[in-house]
Length: 51
Image 1 (cartoon, rainbow, N blue to C red):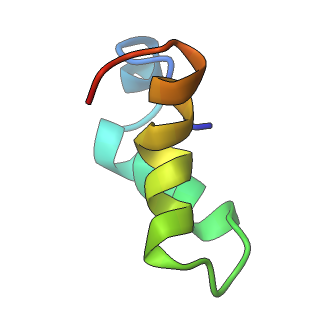
Image 2 (tube, rainbow, N blue to C red; image 1 turned 180 degrees about the vertical axis):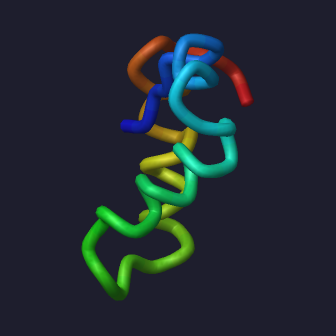
């Protein structure tokens, strides 16, 4: 599950840089569905949000 510390991260980098850094630290070869889980679906399920 991805969660940023925005706007605090702006003290060190732009949000897009933080996002890109995470993308580069994830394992290679994740499917689109797995990436969607990391970047939103897991949080929505955990917090019981309707998407």
